[in-house]
Image (cartoon, rainbow, N blue to C red):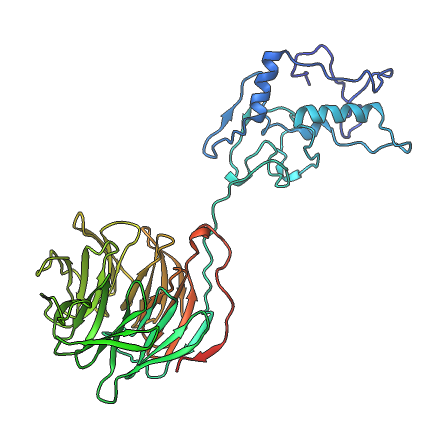
Length: 485
C-alpha cells in the first residue's frame, strides 16, 4: 500500500498472515523519536478540521478532499496502534512509544484506543475519501459508534414526557352528583379545594389535608356550582333555588346572597370583583359584588340552560356554552354576543381559554358531538377534532402548551394533549362514571377530577415551569384513600 502522505518510505507486508506490524529502525531511541511538524498553514487547517465539531448530515454522503482522507470513514484500526504493555522494568520499547505518539497525533492524547468491531467498515483500506452517513444522528462523531468517547456531546431527540398513569391521591366524596350540567369542584389560588356535596360545601386544604365544612343550605336546597375568586378567599356558591351566595372561606362567613335567576345556577365565572352567573333560565347575569344591586346587567341569547362560562385571561371576553349546542363570545360592554358559533351538535359545557395565545378558545361538545374545537376569536377561524366520547371539561396548562380533557360516555377517560399537534401524551383511567368535574392546582402541575362514582382523584400531569423539558416522572406515590366529609 502506498503511503498516503507521499513519503519515500514504504511499509512492507509480513510474509505470514496476521495483524500488520510497524517496523522501526534498530537504532531508534526514545529520545530521538518524534513526529515532524506540518507547515504552519497546513497545521492550522488540519486543526480547524479536527476541532470544528462539525456533524455531517445523515441524508447525504460527504466527500473529503482527494488528498485528505475522511476521519470518520477511515479504518484506523488497521494501523494497530493500540497501547503496548509495559515491560517488566516499567519501560516501553521503541515500538510502543512510536505507537503512542502516532495515536496521539491522529486521535488526540485522551482518545480511547478500544476497537469496536461494530464501527469498522468491511473494507481493508486504511483511508477512505467519503463518509457514509447512514447512521443515527446520535451516533455521528469522528469515532464512529463509540458511545464512550469523552468530550463528544450527543443531542438525542427528547423522549416524551412521562405522565404517571395512576392518581397519587383519592378522596371519597359521598353525594357528589352525577349531573353533566353542574360545576361542583374548584381549586383556589391559596391551594384550597372546594367541593359541593349535596346541600353542603366542603373545603379541603391541599397543604394540611384538613377538611372544613363551609356551609349547609338546608334540606330545601342543593349546591349546583362553586367558584373561587382569582385572588383572595371569596367563594361563590350557586344554588338550585336560583340564588348565589358569596362566602369568605378564611372565616367561614357568608358575606351576601344575590338573587336574579329563577332556576338553578350551574355556571360561575369570576373577573376581578365581577361575577358572571349562568342559569337554567337561559340567562347570564353580570354582578359586581361591591355594589348593593344583585346584578348590573343581563345577557340573553341562549335558548336553553347555560352550563359553561369562562372569562379570558385578559378579562375582555366571556365565553358561554349552553344546552342549545351554541357557543357565544361576549365582550365587557355588550348585551348581545359578538361571536356566535353553531358548529357543536351537543351541549357545550367544556370551555377553556389558552393562556399562551391571545384569542384562542377551546370548547368541547356532549355525547352527540364528541368534538374538541379550537376557535381563534381574533381571525374568527376554527379547527375541530373528534375525541370519540362525550367531552365534559377542558383546562389548559399554564406551564406548557398542553391541555387536559375529561370524558363521559363511553370511556370515562382523562386525556392529556399536546397543542397544536393534538397528539396524546397520556390517557388516564380509573373513574367508573363520567368524569364530570375538573380543576387545576395553583402551581399548574396537578389536576383533580370528580365523577358520579363519588371519588375525587388527584393526578400529576403537567411539569413545573422550571422543568418543562424534564423526562422524569412528576409527582408522588399514592398517599392512600381518605374521605372529604
